[in-house]
Amino acid sequence: MRMDADKQIAGLSVDSQYVELAVEVFSMLADATRIRIILALRDGELPVSSLAEIVGKSPAAVSQHLAKMRLTRLVSARQDGVRVYYRLENEHARQLVSDAIFQAEHALDAEPRHHARGVSHSDDSHADAARAGAGHRREDA
Image (cartoon, rainbow, N blue to C red; front, top):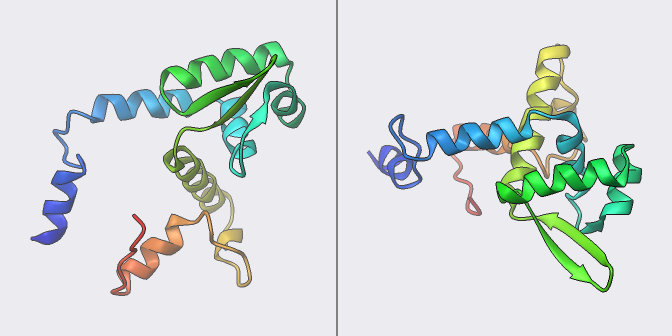
């Protein structure tokens, strides 16, 4: 089957070598401040001071979170003079957080906000999955 082959290639089997690493990623994301940092970085890079203001934590606390997030390659950094700018390493962290937020909406609301008409689903792989289930294949995956 083609779908099974795609899952094997992508490391999505139950015996994948990536399962333990995926647990580490989820562990890293099991913190509200880190989720907020990822949400803040969705649209581009920001310095620590801006991130601290956005997430409501001290720059020192945000720096500690960012250091841990760099170790698991969720974020990367670029130095410009004395300022360090952080950005998401890739789109997977953004998508994981978006999907977790959408799942949280399902847990709280009978009609999740992301299902409402007129709501943009640009971060919504849930909508992509619904389209895929209707016989359409997502091309940018």
